[in-house]
Image (tube, rainbow, N blue to C red; front, side, top):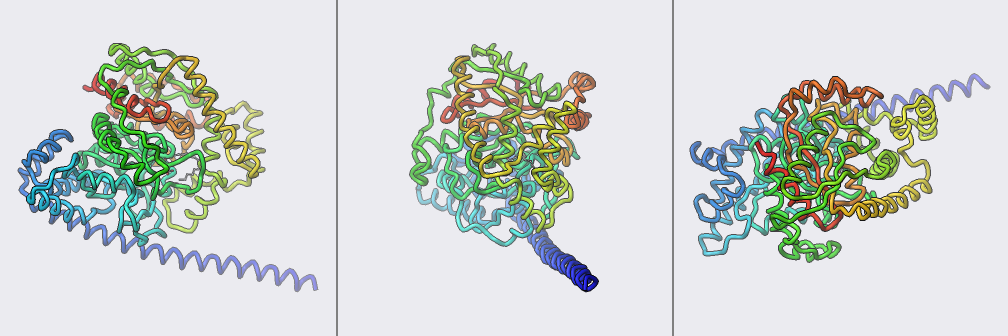
Length: 570
Ligand SMILES: CCCCCCCC/C=C\CCCCCCCC(=O)NCC(=O)O
C-alpha cells in the first residue's frame, strides 16, 4: 500500500514538473516569436526613418543639428525652417546618434503627419504656439497613443496605448512633435538600461557603461545629439540618475505638479512612492523653459482635477534670487566615490560665489528611510515583479537581481540578525526591507508620513529652503552594476519618498585626481567593494549634482541648478 502511495506521489511530481517545463517551453517559443516580430518591425521602422531623413539635404540637417534648443525654437518661430524639415533633420540626427548607443525603440511615424499639419496651419495664418515644431523624444513607458509601453517585457508587445499621457497631450498642444520612443530597463525598477527586446543602451561617453535608467534611452539620445528634449519618469531616480551619468540635466517635479494619469511605473498600486514625469535636456535652462511653458496655464489641473492649480512661480526662479541651502556629501548610508562627493563641494563654492548661503545639513536617519523606500517600492515583497519577470524572457542578470526576493521573509530576517551580529549594518538593514505582514506595511506608511514631517522640521530648524547633495554614488558604471547595487539609489530615492521636487545638472567630470583618491575608498562591505570596482577607469566621465526642495518649489530648484550649471560649465 505504502509503495503504491509513494509511486503515485512520485509520478504526480514528475508529471507536474514535466508539464511546467513544457508550458514554459511553449511560452518561451511564443514570446521569442513576439520579440523576433518586433525586432523586424523596428528594423523596417529605422529604414523608414532613414528614407524620411533623406527628404532634406545633408547641409540642411547639419545646419539644424548645430542649433541648440533656444536657437532652433527661434528659427522655427521666424520661419527659417518648416516643421517638416526639422522633423526630417531629427530623424537623421537620432539615427546617427543611435549607431553607437542603441537608444531608439521605435520612431513615432505620425510625427511626419503632425509636422506637415503644422506647416499647413501656419500657411493658413494660424498663430505659432510656444513650442512650435520642436522635436521631443519620449521614454518608452510614457503613454503614446498607438504605441506599446512594454517596459521591456516581451509579454507586453502588441498592446498599444489608447491615450497619450497628459504631458504628451499638453506638449502637442504647445506645438511640440513627439518623434521617437526610447529604451528602458526591463521592469523600469533599475538604473541600468537594457532588455531582451531592444537590447542594451550604451553611454555615449564610454562604451560598456550604462547611460543610467530607467530613462536611459532618453539620456543617451540627448547626450549624443539625437534629441534636444525628452520626457522621462522617476520613482527612484529614473530621470536624475541617467541625467547625471550622461552629463545632461533633468528634473523630477513633486508628484502632483504634473498629472500622473495614464503613467506606467514599475509596480502599479504603491502609495506614497509615485511616478513623476518630467523633462530631460542638454541643460537645466531648457528644463526650466519647458516647465514654465507647461505651468504658465492651468492646463494640467483642468485636464486632471487631482493636480492642484499651481501656476509657474516666476518669483522663485528670478535670476539673482538668493537661497539658503543645506548641503551634504555623505548621507550616512552610502559614502559616494571621490568625484561624486567633490562636485558637491564645487557646486557649494559656485553657489556661495553667486551670493547664496550654504550651511551643512545632515538628513535624518537615511539608512532607515532607505529601508522604507525599498519596502514601499516593492509593496508586495516583490511578488508583482517576480511574476512578470519569471513569465517573460528577460536578461539573466535581472533574474539574479531578483534572487534575494525569493528568499522567504522569515529567512531574510534571520539573515539580517546574522549580518548584524557580524557588524554588517547595511546588509542587516537590507534583509529587513520587505514587509512580512500587512500590519508591518501599514506601519511603514505611517513611518514614511512621519519622516516627511521630521525632515521638514529639520529644514525649518536649519532655516533652509532646499538641499544640495550628490546625484549618484559612482560615475556611470558598467551595464550590470545597477542590478548588483540597487542600494546605491539613496541620494535620489529619498526625494521620491519625501515627494520633493528634485533635479540634477552636470557639475564636472571624473578626474585623474578622483581616480587616485579612489584607491583610499572604503571596502568595508561588499557593496562598497563593488562601488569601488565599478568606479574604476572613469576619467572624463560626466558627474552631476542634485538640488531638491519641498513640493511646489520646483522653480527654486531650477534657479539654483541653473546657477550651478552656468558657473561650472567648461
Ligand atoms: C530589476 C530587478 C531588480 C530587483 C530589485 C530588488 C529589490 C530592490 C528594490 C528596490 C530597488 C531600488 C532601485 C530603484 C531604481 C528606480 C528607478 C526608477 O525610478 N524607476 C521608475 C519606476 O520604477 O517606475
